[in-house]
Image (cartoon, chains in turn green, yellow):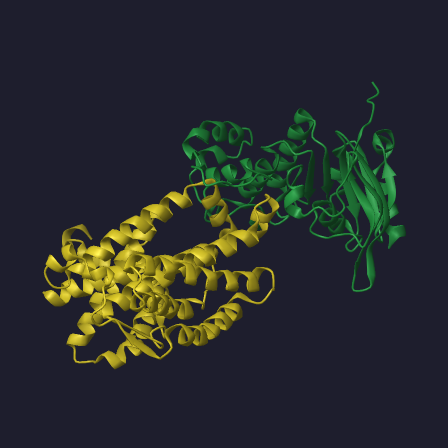
Length: 254
Length: 301
């Protein structure tokens, strides 16, 4: 089965400079619809900068970024939240600690929209929140009215993930979202993440340091080095790739 | 007895400061020093307007506008000018001193013989000191209801999220700069209304009446929290009002002990420091266990 691949996000010769140092160096990348791309790279290779550039937290010093046909190079973070959502590595970053699980979900229900002086209607949404939290299999549904600061790290990351996908994003950025969790919790969240992305056919970019995860999940694998994409494996190449080969790539890069 | 009524009245009038500061200090999570300038700014604006013949209610609304403008300045300096919020607040507070002198024309204006909010005939018919209880109560009910409504709206939730986790709020498309500015505008507007009311209640505006205001406002917040513990957000607003009244009652007791009004600022700081230390002290000394033990009948220990 061959999908006619439609480009969703295109980066053309994008450079990002900080302190006279090019963190992204004439980077070219086309993300197609329904791509689930895992991103590898040593520290300082530019993975986080790539995400910050896509999300609008960093503006490129040169180059262009397009969403489908529309140029979005100078769009603000807030404008980009209309089509993009993000899960961070640190469980503390993704949720508001003093607000309850339900209140956090309600906030993300309006991602990218103007917030109005209109009753929030929390109760009307509880049923829906119950349903989506149940799917994470970690008792999150029992804690809808708990302040998120009282949740475990795994529950907070699961909540961050739900908040990112509740309103379907055109592009989902996962920034090592399981890295701060213990191996078992990390594995559970990664399994749920994969299930959800495949079920909803989301377009997703996932940074990881786990070579196994990078090989196991997704249909495309990028290796970043010195602000450039060094390798871009498609689904077929990726399926033949072994962990040993990946390790060699890293050793050569260093 | 009349002293107690007077304290409750003062507590209710001053409670507006606590509730206003709650928006920035507890929800947005920073200390806004602007209030030390906007409190006398509100007083100066209202008193000057009244002496020029403006209706006292309109004069109080004018004070709100003046305070909001000062809050807007702090907000712009902080969010757009990237000046640390403490410094931005101090700059505006300092500027307010000159502005207030310009508005008043002298360091002190009396309202003697002028109509104020408190010269309403119904309020005059009440027993001594009940006028401030009445005005304070009505105002606090209105403000608390409005704030409680606001905080339950989508906009209010975005405001709370901004204080709770700005990075998350921003990544959900919330304009955190605007939320911060909104908080500073409303908070300082309300502080100025407090200044306008207290000046009308005292019968004068004085250039120095802003000194130590932030401590008084903080005291009502902290006393409310220490006295009532874990609460929902709406209950917390009421707790701040109760905290303000408790603070006045404590001051009354202190006065009865023989201190005079010149010691107020020293005592205010002492009360606030005590309340801030209390929670950690309680943990260290296991005070709650001791209290529980003391309250349990011997045979059930």
